[in-house]
Length: 263
Image (cartoon, rainbow, N blue to C red; front, side):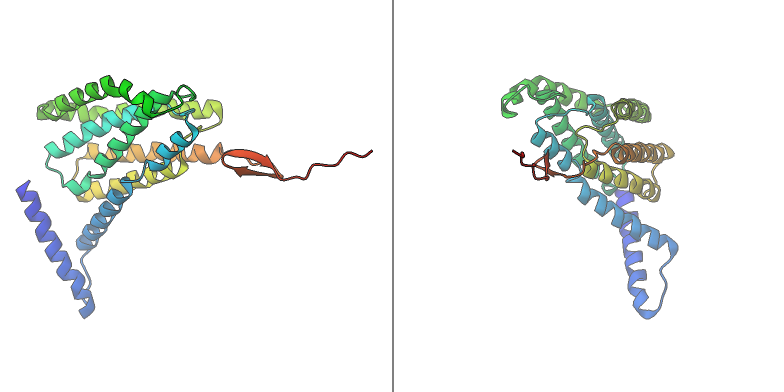
C-alpha cells in the first residue's frame, strides 16, 4: 500500500510539472495525459456514484411500487459489490479506483429494502416506515456475510471475485428477459441506467491505468455491456404518449375539449 502511494505521489508530481510546462511550449507525455484522464474520470465516477441510484430510489418511493424490477438483479449487484470491495482492498488497489462501489452498494441495499417492504406490485403497505422492523433479520444476515467475506483468505477471495461476473450475468439476465417479455421496463429509472452504463465504461479505462487485473477489466466491460442493453430496452419499450394527452403526475390526461351534446 505504501509503495502504491509513493508511486502515485511521484506520478502526480511528474505530471503536474509536465502540465505546467505547457505554458512554456512543452508537450505532456502520453503516459501523463492518460494518468490525468484516468484520475479525472475516477473523480467524476466517484462524485456521480454518490447519487447514481437516487433517481431509482425516488421513483420506487413515488410509485410505492417496484413493479417490473427483478429482485435478483439488485441482489446480484450487492453480492458483487461486497466481494469486489473486499478484493480490491486486499490487493491494495488505489481507493480512487473503486471508491464509488461503496456509494452504489449502500444505494442498492436501500433499493432491496424498499423492494422487501413494498413488494414488486406495491400497495402492500401504506407506510414504508412501518416495514422497517421487518428488515432487521435481513440486515443482520448481510452484516454477517459481509464480515466473513472481509476476513476471507486471499485465495478464497480471488475465487469469489472471479465468480462475481457470473453472478452479475445471472442477476441481470432475468431483468433483461422480463423486460423483453413484458415489452416494458416497469419502474426502472432511465437516469440511473444511463449513469451506470457510463460509469462502468469509464471504469474499464481507469482500471487498466491503475494496473488492475484482466479479470477486473473484463468484469467492468461486461457490466457496461449489460447496462447498455438495459438502457437500450428502456428506449425501445418507452411508453408512447397518445395524441391529445399529456402526462401529469404520472397520470395520462386528455387535452381535448369534450364535445357538447347537440340537442
